Length: 171
Image 1 (cartoon, rainbow, N blue to C red):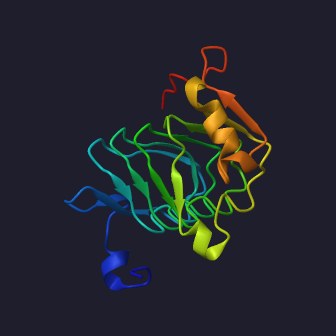
Image 2 (tube, rainbow, N blue to C red):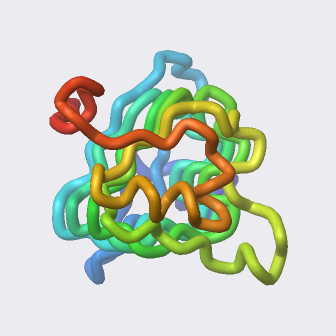
């Protein structure tokens, strides 16, 4: 909504937060083709709509306080993997659609996060993402994810263990 305005053009590069626990957007240099790693600070609970849409990110560190990932938040970005914190409970429509480079998903939530609006629209669940990529989840929750209407469409759901090397991801 703000792209192309003088206000937006004069903003510095980086993350922009509200003071009520929501991340609004990420501004990057569109001419800088180097992939980026972003760290979202602790305390924030919501990644806003279109926040990282189309961004040149290879990785992101999300805060443990995150609970909601809004519409198209990461749509079309170049993430290679995503680690969802244990408190994520809602992923909204098309949050990760068209993430063609996504090679793995790590979800620390014991209960599979729900996909808001999917039932109404019938699309928007990791569209254009290879459903054979590994999805790592808590060992006690593997069957919940495999039996879930949407998470269960991934065919390679595995437990997070020391052998997988995903329990202590460092950025």
